[in-house]
Amino acid sequence: MAGATYLLRALPLVALRERIENPWLLSFLHYVPFAVLTAMTVPAILTATNAVVSGTVALLVAILVALRGRSLMTVALAAAAAVLVTEAVLALL
Image: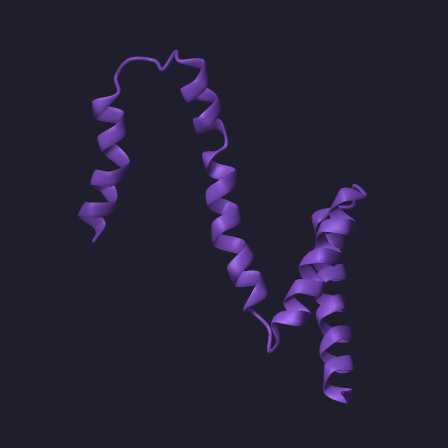
């Protein structure tokens, strides 16, 4: 498994020795890390709680707090509080 991981990481470095100058390819490659991170974290956020609803509420709260320019700690605490409140409300229903 370690060999396969190393091969997948080393192969592009060996195969592409020249600098990539194609602007379209460069702009495409610029967004790959963001797309991969989103594809990995959003499903984990939605399924991390007992109900998908509380994960969705926490995600929306985190996005809103982050868009207001708050720190990462504030965003995380707001999302955790949203999960607690949503789970408590769902338990009452």
